[in-house]
Image (tube, rainbow over all chains, first blue to last red; front, side, top):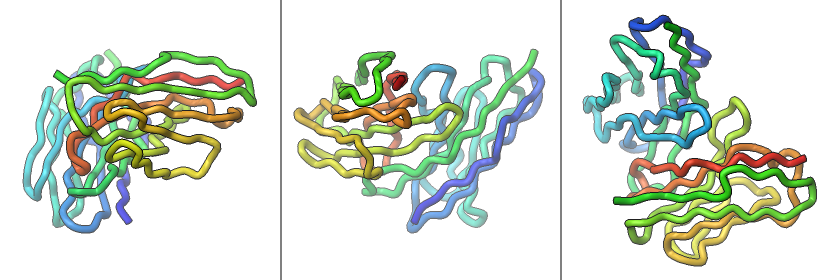
Length: 112
Length: 112
């Protein structure tokens, strides 16, 4: 079956530091890959996505590249801000599957 | 544009009492609908998903049930709540079965 493994948190960084949150997956076929973000007390929001190998998803300074050879979709940002403090979820979904598979989430805290 | 509503936002219920959480989606037709639970500091647990009216798939065989009485309405129910039912309940929808999901604001349930 499908699975997603995320880097365990929590992750604490200083403002303007470089961020990497690792995500690897196991799936049949050619899934779409997603990063979602959850701010305290809220639902999840789609941050970025990639639908095929070598695609790069980007949004709000965050980037992730769909690497089929390493089955990875690592999230990166060059300079984090305090407002980026949140929980980040990596997820995958197969075309025509009824559901997505989510990682356990990684909590990021950015200190001024 | 599409919006998703969940209510209530917070709920405190005694053990053994019934539960009804409602989710509605506006601005789209025949969405895929999902119920998730998130325990404190934990990842997402998929409870139910639905690809159409009257079509419910259960992921977790517990004392919870779901119904979809209308195309854009998804209801989560329980006849008798347990302490372990406490958590943050999230409803989500997607256009495609393998596509990105859009989450509601969530319901914080505390069973006392």
